[in-house]
Every structure is written in structure tokens, then in C-alpha cells.
Image 1: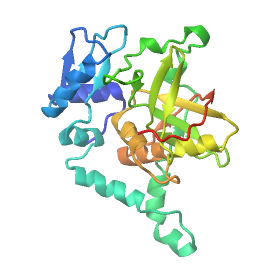
Image 2: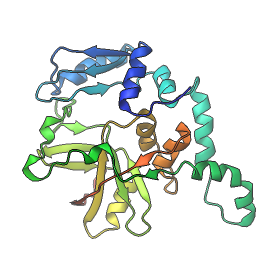
Image 3: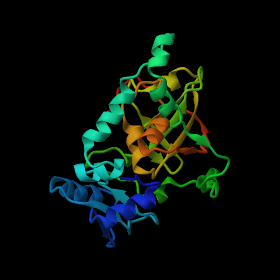
Length: 262
């Protein structure tokens, strides 16, 4: 079973499989979306595509991974155990320390290495670039999920950073709290690799955030991987094809916090 190449293909697949419902009625991202989705999840219902959101010109896909069948569709497998076995073969690996280890793992290492992301010079996100006062996060359908939440949260972002010492990329899924039209707060737990990248800097960290990933890349960004395994390489390994990377990083100054966030 093939995986979806991008979010549009994924939505089309869900719709063909009877796993998606389009909602054309106007729905408010402030509390209303969450209430609808909470009831849908409890009932084992479908993925929902909200097409008419108050205050935003953009649609919102939600509950896309809400059942085992949709997870199988996302990962391109008939059974989740098949994906778990393939994922386990990667997670159990450690960097080879000697010649014997290198020879023993050569075939598997080659398969994984061949899945490294391919860097390209042009990509869709280069076509529209907003800066300064043109940036308005309020145009995105960011959910204010629960009464008592201090602000809307972006709940499925792929946050991309690099270790300033080694250059190693990390892709994590950390909630982002919208502060105003141009800024967010990053909620990462004390042990997360993204936070470790930040602590290794002088207070300035290059960060890119990707929204609307294909399902395998979104899953890989959320997976608790060892630091030596690149999330986009894992996505390529699971899909059987190399991911394409053309990320433009923005330099961001962050304030450190000693509090853990979930």
C-alpha cells in the first residue's frame, strides 16, 4: 500500500475510503471546533475537513489519525504491526562502534542512509513570502481548544531546529501558543531535543515551522526518536522514497523558561 505524497493526496485518499467528512457550515476555531471534534473522536468518527472557519480563509483538517484504520492508511500498511516492526528496526539501532558492528549492519544502514532527505533549491513555500507587518497569524485557523486556555495553540506543527555545534537537524512537534499577529511561544518539555538545541546557543536559534505535512512526515515529527536519527530520514525510510527539503530558517530570539510544558 503506497503512502500519500502530500496533504492534498492524503485528503483525497481519506475521502475515497469514506474516512473524511467535509463541513461547509461556518464553525468558530474558538472552542467550537474542539467541541465538535471531541464528540467525533469519542464516537470513533471520521476525519473532519472544516472548509468555512470564522476569521480565516484557510480550511482545517482534524482527527486525521483518530482510528487504527486511518493510521494504517497514513503509513501505507495493512496492519500497524507491520509499521511497528519496520520502525523498531530503526529505533533499536545505535551508531556502530567498531568494524564488526559496521559490517553486520551494513545492509540496514544503507537502506536507511538512502532515505536521507534530498535538498532542493525551490519549493512551494518560496512562492509567497511575507515579512514585517504583512505577517498575520490571525489568518490561520488556530484553535482555542478549551475554556481556561490562555490563548490559541497550534497543535500539530513540525518545528525544525539544528544543533549549533554539530549541525544535526531535529524535527519535533511542540505546541505553539499564539501571542499576537507575529509571534508565538514555544511549549517544549525540558528533555526535548529542540530545547537542547536552544540551550546550546546564546539566546538566538534558527527555527522553521512546517504546517500541513504529509501524514508520514507528521508522524515522524511526533515520534520519540534518538537524537542520532533524523526525523525526515525516518519518513523517507517508512515511505520508501526520499523526502525533499528546502527549508528557509528564521532567526528567533527566545526566552528560556525552567518550567516544563506538556
